[in-house]
Length: 292
Image (tube, one colour):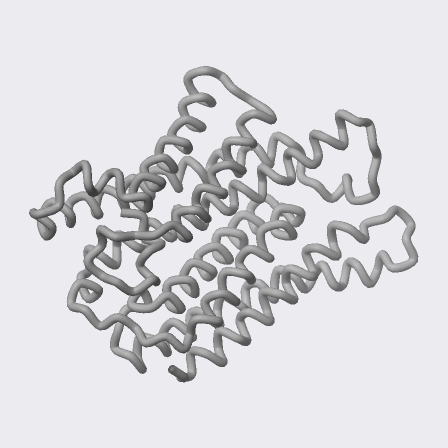
């Protein structure tokens, strides 16, 4: 299905890709006294404006979708992934504005590009027009899940940069771009804050799914619902990020082992999208990312 939202999201994808290239250039071309330093600074300086422009274009694309289809963007896999890419881009822009984490955006912006590209690849699928997807509670359910996923992706980017910098420092390998990596303390702080906000959103999203299951699926036993592969991974994901918070706050964990938890968390998040989902009423694949 074709509409004004498709060209707008293609434009947003191009802006995100250019922004990712700018952030990447600012990271890897930062060689001291390099003759291309001025060009690097100009290219890297465009990364943030391009990211903000992409976010604005996606707002217009989502609005165009809602106006032209009279449906929630969550009624199709394309719309759901588009919103996920937008939320991730928004989280990265906010973190960059506050902490100037160019290196993290160089890692995480390609993830937003891939999500939006994958959504565009499925834009020809018809949306699901079931009455369930018109429910505000279901929209809040999916939005909470998607926002938590975006925050976990931000934490993943911080964890990757943390592990890279830790490895370089431990091996005493001085690389030109090492100066562009944020301090380990900054990376750890941003990862923690992203997880601290993402975890309750994930819990709320799963909780709304449980309420819906209890209300509208009386024939489904709790054990059937919990051990559905999709839902089981969602609970495992919730437990993993709760473990991260508990290990940090109660057991005083710091450093590398916490970052590995965040890396494993994004792997589980991807698995949550890929595994089959048989307990939801709505059958569109788009809602299979909802997590409960």
